[in-house]
Image 1 (tube, rainbow, N blue to C red):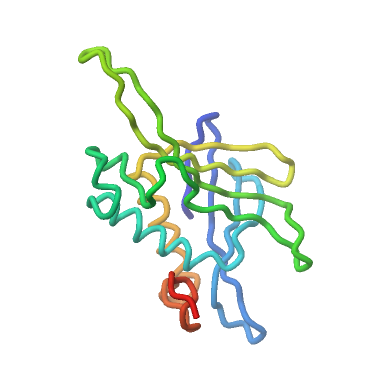
Image 2 (image 1 turned 180 degrees about the vertical axis):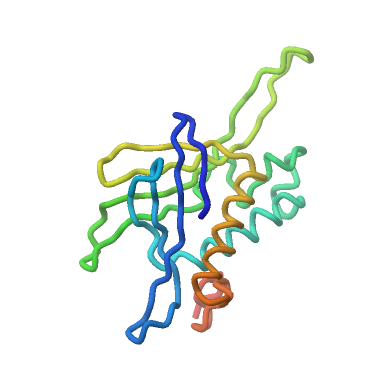
Length: 182
């Protein structure tokens, strides 16, 4: 179970739960959210491949790949070109497509910090992981890229365990989960 200590002191637990087909074979995951041990919401139906892709992207950015190389501190390096962008947004959806019952999202924010010694501003980037439960009460954790990598990596490892060791990054439908289109 992955978890985050939030800025208000509460603890957000995120647990991958297997989605199964009509014969009970697990094929993807949904995320169950708990706030301080109390059920908080269910989000992200079939989000495993996206989490797997994000884990690889954060690790590549930390190594200085792509546009992330312009950030000198590896903790400021995240995937994506935009300085302030969304890495993921998972919501609860009913069979009819209605949204409600929870949300988990991660947005990048660039934060200026004053450095008194040199007397200059330093820009940092952080991932703001925010969750809302069915009651509408929100939670927020602010993470470095290292902390986001550990959190998402733990979710991916646990998800693969839920799926009997199946690699969630591998999708049997050609083009699905990639930038390839038909």
